[in-house]
Length: 382
Image (cartoon, rainbow, N blue to C red; front, side):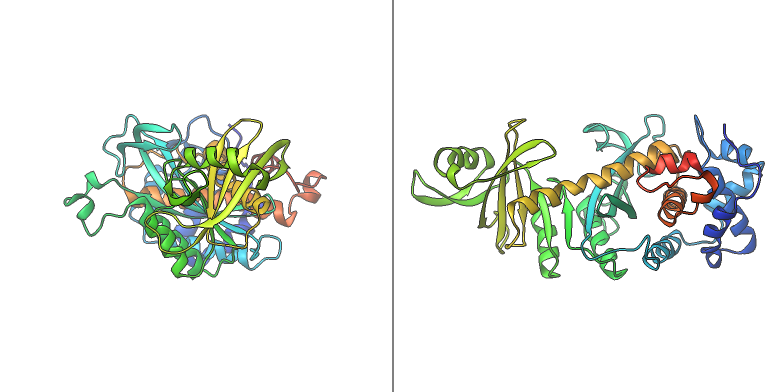
């Protein structure tokens, strides 16, 4: 295990930005946990953190559970810190990305939120916690924004009709509203084929925001059939066949990362929505895959639509970094409050490394620039 055997001025400087969120004793625990979370562990829990810190286990437990501090206020201040520095700030050219991630908990049935449900990590059902999250991305630079704790309807007395139950789609709308409230500028909202339900798209449209999303292959799009000479709602398979047979001369092709992409675009609408969207039927000539992307930006070009949508993978990189380098999924606490506090501290530890990299704070120390280095490489350098 690698340990910090002395105080590190860069870490202390970062921590002081959040001093106003805590009492003196709380701030000591907060700073200690920040140090602990950027150490290397084979297995992390409060016991291993306490040993690393040479700290009292009960004090750490109390800090995560009973102590009076607000993880939402802490996250708001984290985002303000990033917004207010040129090297870490946001631009209206960036994108807001929404997705969910799973934390496998096969032996933790009593943990709040753990249920046998769809686990995004596996792509199938498993016992897990699920979080719906947002991130910001621009020019290969990405930042986690917010995490929402998801609980299945089975945990509520009245099921999905319980006033306290929130679906993943409702949490996604909250994340969008939160980004707007925090005045984070972005050009598009991106999400995969699971999230473009009609109410989510309408929510975005009514707020005059722009989205780019993939839709499932069975999602119906209004289109004129050149053979039948009539228009009706059809699924992707039929649409792709008609384009290949009758409209291929109108597709636009370009190369993206070594793959030849052909796109047929048209303005239409989805079933169960009442506003126009631009539809992009995307043919990957290398893999032979067909996907359908939609946007309410009717002037969006084929190339920009595809390349912007593919920025969605930034959130997957964040999930991987949080888990692989900062133990996002290694918690051994059971209640929602403790889990959310732990997750907020993990995201803060990730932000510390990002802040150091973007501001070049280790340049003189290690005689090399960390620009372009991954978060994990910067963590190792620290």
